[in-house]
Amino acid sequence: MKKSYGEYFNKPSLKSARKRLTKDTPNIDFQRHINIKDVGQGKHYLIQTYGCQGNEADTETMKGILEALSFKETQREDHADLIILNTCAIRENAENRVFGELGRLKKYKRINPDLILGVAGCMPQEEDVVNRLLEKYHHVDLIFGTHNIYKLPEYLESALMNKERVVEVLSEEGSIVENMPKKREHHSKAWVNIMFGCDEFCTYCIVPYTRGKERSRKPQAIIEEVKELVKSGYKEVTLLGQNVNAYGRDFTDINYTFADLLDDLGQIEMPRIRFTTSHPNDFDEQTVKVLAAHANMMPHIHLPVQSGSNAILKKMNRKYTKESYLKLVQTIRKHIPNVSLTTDIIVGFPGESETDFKETLDLVEQCDFEGAFTFVFSARKGTPAANYQDNTAFTEKKERLQRLNTIINAGYKRGHDRFKGKTVEVLVEGVSKKDDHIMAGYTRHNKLVNFPGDVSLVGTLLNVKVNETKTWFMQGEIYEDA
Ligand code: SAH
Ligand code: SF4
Ligand code: F3S
Image (cartoon, rainbow, N blue to C red; front, side, top):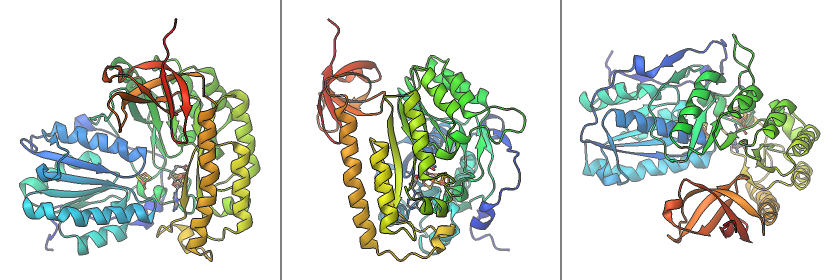
C-alpha cells in the first residue's frame, strides 16, 4: 500500500470515541518513554491557542516539549519554522475561526516552504474536520489530537527529517501522561490538571468525544506538583477538569474524592487555590464545607447551569433540576456567605420555548450571579442534540441572548459594587493594556482591579482600596496601613 501520508496515518472516529469500555487508565511516564533529540536546533515555533483552560494547559506542555527539542519561541509568524494551532471544537464559530486562520497562514508557506503548519487539540478529534483538512488544506503538514501530545517529538522528527506529512489522531479512551515538560505562561499563577476527559455526555457537547473518558491523576502527583509550584514562588493554582467534582470517581484502588483532594491541598502553603469546572450534579455539601474551612480556597465558584427550565435540562442530560440547583446555591451561600457565583448558559437549545427561556431568566435573578459565559446553541455533529428538532429562528435566539446578557451584565456590576470603599487582596498580574503606569490584578473573588503602581509589583499579593466600579473592572489604589 502506498504510504501517501508517510509513516503516520490514523484518522479519528467519533463513534469509537463515544465508547467507555474500561475503568483502567494506563499511566505513561514521559521521561522514561520518550526519546528527546535536538531536532529544533536553530528553529523557532509559534503556537496559537483556542478554547478552554484545558487547551491553554496543553499549549504549555507543547511549548515545554518543543523547548526540550531545542526550538525557541517567537511571536513573529514570518520567523517561525513551526506554527501549531491548538484548536477548540465546542461551537461552530470557534472552528470557523481556525479554518479562516489556516487560509491566512498559507502565505507564510510560500515565503518559507520548509515551514511546518500543524493543527492540534479538539478539532482533529472530529473525522469531518480531518477529512476537510486532508481534502482542502494541503498546506497543513501535521495533525494530531488531544491524546497524543506526548508523541510530538516523534512527529516532528518525521516531519522535519523525512519531510513526511504526519496525521495521527487517536480515538481511544485516554491515558494519563506524567512528567511532561511545561513552559508555563505565568510566573505567579499556574494551571494544574487534576483530571482529563468527561463521562457526562450532555447532549449538546462534543467534549466527551474529543477528550475521552473521565480519568483522574493520582492525588500524590497533584499534591507534589502544587508543592513544587509553592517552591518556585507561585501564588495561585487553578485545578482543571471538565467536571472536577467527579474527581476520584474512577479510582479502583482507593476511595478519595474531590473534597479529600481540596482538604489535602488546603494544608499546603499555596496562597490561592481555584478550580474549574464544576458540575452541579456532583457538587456535594462535604466539598462546600472543605472550601469554607480553608483560607486558601478562593470564594469564587463557577457553576454552569446551562438552563433554568427543567424540560430543557432533561433534554440536555444535565441530571439536575432548577430546584436542586437553587438548593445547591443556598447550601454554598450558607457555608461561604460572601461567595461570588458565576455560570455558563446556553440559549436556543432545540425546543426551548419563550416560557423555558423565562425560567432561565428567573433562575438568573434568583442566583444573583456575578458573571456568566452565555452562548447560542451550536449543533455539533455526532452529538444527540444535533438531531433534535429545532424550530426557533436564529434571530430569536440572538434576541434571547441579548435579553439575558442585559441581566448578566447588571450582575457583573453588582458584583463589583459590593466592594466599593472596601480593601481587597490583589494578586498583581501585569500592567494594564492601556497604560504602563496602571497595574492589573485579580481579587480573591476573581474581580479585575486596576490601580496605579509599577512593574516591580507583578507577582505580589497586596491590598488595594476600591474607589470606582465599572461593569468589567474596578479601580483603586494601593492601601498602606497607617
Ligand atoms: N465542562 C464544563 C464546560 C465545558 S464547555 C461544564 O460542564 O461546565 C464550556 C461551555 O460551553 C459549557 O458550559 C456550555 O455552556 C457551552 N457549550 C458546550 N457545548 C455547546 C454547544 N454545542 N453550543 C453552545 N454552547 C455550548
Ligand atoms: Fe460537556 Fe457536559 Fe462534560 Fe461539561 S460536563 S464537558 S458540558 S459533556
Ligand atoms: Fe474546546 Fe476542547 Fe476545551 S472542545 S472547550 S478546547 S475541551
